[in-house]
Image 1: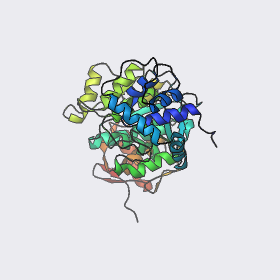
Image 2 (image 1 turned 180 degrees about the vertical axis):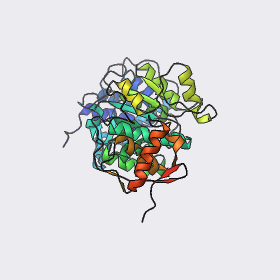
Image 3 (image 1 turned 135 degrees about the horizontal axis):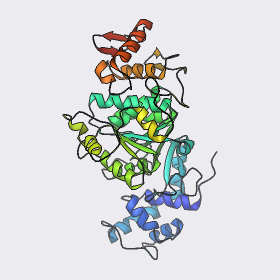
Image 4 (image 1 turned 135 degrees about the vertical axis):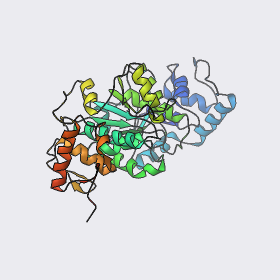
Length: 387
């Protein structure tokens, strides 16, 4: 059991519970060096802490009065106790698990659900992209998530619809332990369609947020969430992005922190790939498959087929894909089965997600068909119908 929260942690949590207090305003309130407990005490009295700089846009005397009223009406320690009762953990900069000690724009506090030790694991790779992804983009994200997890990588995403969700589904399909960074309170699932996935990530990995429990989705919170992903990751991989996609904000945050960014090449006719293709034109290294990512991490060389399973579950690990056993399969075979589990996959599409030739893919698929692991209808690979 964790120790009781310190007064500083209670005060930081109280500040982020205030309406409209995000990273910029938190940094402003705490930027004078006055302890968080004193900042809260001053605000209770409708006063700003001494030495504070110019107020950010939108901070008015009326807003400060509202903060004062809220702080007087609510007891921060009781609010934090409520978070603990929901099973959430709360950490601040003094905590051993704190991952943002060197970050240029750290959160004030983090709420978490799951295994905090995952933030100390290495490597961590963020796999992100557009919510309006193509079918191929979803398959690529699923395959990257699965194969990176098999190699012992912690797959990070924002748990958004589309690419983010597919990457975490892929990681979970091979027993990976993903890390989700969300922009709402940990008790406010967004999007609601990801409720089951949200629970799976919290149960098998870790969810974190800088938003106080109960915080509803607001547009500005998601770019703020992106900087937290960039601050955690050793590498950011963009699977698909429109030319003005929100994922490009994650790219900028990563580059600001010196974090390598890889982009998955896409069709020049696909609007969903316009942003990622432009990144490639600008000199961003390509991520044709998980092996490219592992190479940049300096962990593994390219294997004979597909991906090395590295320190992950390995080719002989147990598990299943939608009820089909993958025991004894190689990483290459597991990749094909996992993609077929997500949705029927055309042989041509497999070329974009695995490092192999068409003859090698055909030979492997035919072997899987003979074992009854997959079915091949023309050029489409799928899982056998349940019996």
